[in-house]
Every structure is written in C-alpha cells, then in structure tokens.
Length: 416
Ligand code: ADP
Ligand code: ASP
Ligand code: MG
Image 1 (cartoon, rainbow, N blue to C red):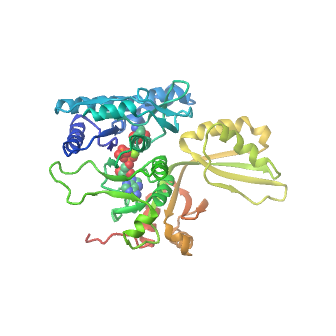
Image 2 (cartoon, rainbow, N blue to C red):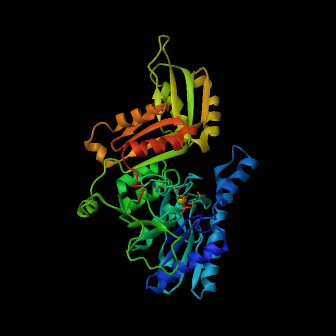
C-alpha cells in the first residue's frame, strides 16, 4: 500500500491512513506501507536548497529532501501503534534500497527484503519512506519527484506482493487530469504501455519509472483513493483503476478507444541556440555535455540550415535543470559556436496517447486543427507510435487540454 502526500498531510489524515492499513491487516493480509512526505513539504525543502545555493549539489539536495518522508514514516508507525498494531519504520538506508548515484533522480538497483519479510511474517506492519535510497558510496539518494510510487512498486516486487495499491487523492486514472477537465472519465483499466506513455508525458498520477518497473516485474498495480468513507466496504474488489497487460485487456473484452488519455506537462523549458554551424558533429557538441550532466533532453528541432551554413537548434529540458543546462551551454559557447542562447520556461507540452493510434490515421491532424481553431500556436511537435505531443505557451495549457478532450469525443456525459 502506498499513500501520497495529500493522504499523509497532518495527524488526522495519517490516522485515516492507519485505519485503512489496519483494516487490510485485519482482513488477513501481511502489509508493507510506503509513504510520501506531507503535501507541500518536498516543495518547501527544495525551496530551501535553491535559496542556499541556486546551483545546488544534488547529493546535498538529497540529504535535505529525503527528510520529508522520514517524518511521515515515523508518524505512521507511531499512529499504527496507537491503534494497537505492531508496526515499525524502515528508512531507505536501513533496508537498504540500493540505487545508482544519480542524485536527485536515482534509479533503484535492488532491495534487500530479507529483514522486511521476517518482520512482516512476525506480524509487524512495515512502514517504508518512499523516495529514499542509498548509493554504493553510502550516501542518501532520492528517486526524482513523485518517486514514492517507484519505491512502492520496487518494494512490491522485492517482497513478491500480490498487489501494489497506490492510494492518492483521486479515485483512479482518468482520461485526463480531473482537476483540469471536469468531464474527464475514470478508466477502469489501463494497459502498462498506455500508462507508461501517459506518465512519461506528464500525467503525474504515477511516476514514469514506477510504471516501467511494474511492467518489467509484472507487479499488479491499482490506483485508488484514500479518501473513501471509512466504513464503506467497496462492493467492487477493485474500486480504482487497475493496470493490466495488453492480453489481459483483450480478455476483458473492453471496447478500445482511439485515445486513452491526454496529459499536460508544465515542467519543461525551451532552449534555442541560434546560428549553430551546420556541420557534422555540431549537435553532438551540444547534447554530449548535457547528457554527461544527466540532463534529459526531450523535444529537439533543428531548423533547415540557412544559406550561411548555420542553423537554429531548439530543444526542451526539465524546468528544474534549465539553469544548469544554460550554465553548461554558456561555458561551451566557443566549442559549439552558436550566436545566442534564448530560454523560455513558460511553455507546456500537451500530449495525446492511445494504442488505437497504431492503426488509425488522422490523430495528429485532429489535434492540430482543434488547437488552430482556438488560436493556440504550436512551437514544437514530437511523436511516437502511440503518442503525439506539442509544445505551446504555458498560459494556454488548460484551454488546450479541454479543447482536445472534446475534440476526441472523450467528455463524460454531463448527466454522469
Ligand atoms: P500523490 O501525492 O498521491 O502521489 P500526485 O499529486 O502525485 O498524488 O498525483 C495525483 C494527481 O495526479 C491528482 O490529484 C491529479 O490532479 C493528477 N493527475 C494528472 N493526470 C491524471 C489522470 N490522468 N488521472 C488521474 N489523476 C491525474
Ligand atoms: N515527496 C516526493 C515528491 O513530492 C516523492 C513523492 O511524493 O512521491 O516528489
Ligand atoms: Mg505522486
């Protein structure tokens, strides 16, 4: 069971969570619980790091931001004990959860689950702070924003859990963020492939890595709400959204929609390098150093070379890495040979995702037309087999998502 930040925000909510956990144990399950920091806490801690040093050392950043989850794991263990349950916390370094040393976005390499299993077998509820890991060098790492989802799936895989239930503040995965589009529809099932793509383009309901890990390890994942009525036993065993394989979905005989979901991501920033020499190796000198600094580049456009043998290169990086990327590129100005660097943090990436696209033409055309009709300008485009993404002005995010939700006929009946 994993509980997100909103579910852990304050003593009262933690008590509610403890009751949900206790009921599962009472129903005969052995339970491991992964918790997030209280809502807003990680942002607060990140803010302190930025104030201390805008170009912060990611290793020290991890020391600071990992603390939010330490607090909630201890508090949940205490609250469970107050309800008469046996419970103890297991910090990331105590298990440990082994990760690589890519601080602030570390990748889990394995979990030592022996002690955990022994304690659970003895009737103890294991409470594990999400987000935290330990590098080979013995330093605390964190898994990137939203990383507690990945901790939960990794723990589930490590202990061979029957299921990984991700409790959050919405009651499942919707066709788009239900906080943006009131007419979004809840999906009963979504495939790993679709969820992976949705998460990777910004549906923050699950962290991308948690989905790829679940897919790789065959972990059954359900997304559901922790804000359900305490006494209401759901008639349905799966009240939320279940992530299933392609074959499983076919067995369920669901009607396949062309588009599964729409996602928006405001956490990207655009960089333009003007008048880059149009010769072999130029692009490599731009992206090589960024890769070395662990900065993920997403959309890339290289304009057709102009007559003077020069070209503009436009690309996006995570907003959190913009300053570092800019600093790096400025240091490489001579080597790359560009003229000017222009950055824009006020962009958003809007994506439509669906496996139905593999066999249907016209998905992109519908998107471009619908946006054009509202006067929304497209700054960049990228596609994959089951996704089309466009970069637009950040101020137009909500409008674009609503317009597309309607254009693909995904709106729920108003009566429903
Ligand atoms: P937690 O703190 O529990 O990890 P998050 O805030 O990370 O919760 O994720 C839950 C949020 O994800 C929801 O409140 C919702 O606004 C957002 N969200 C974005 N896209 C979707 C979607 N397609 N379906 C459901 N929720 C979504
Ligand atoms: N607390 C971390 C964050 O806010 C991890 C998580 O909640 O999943 O990103
Ligand atoms: Mg989350």
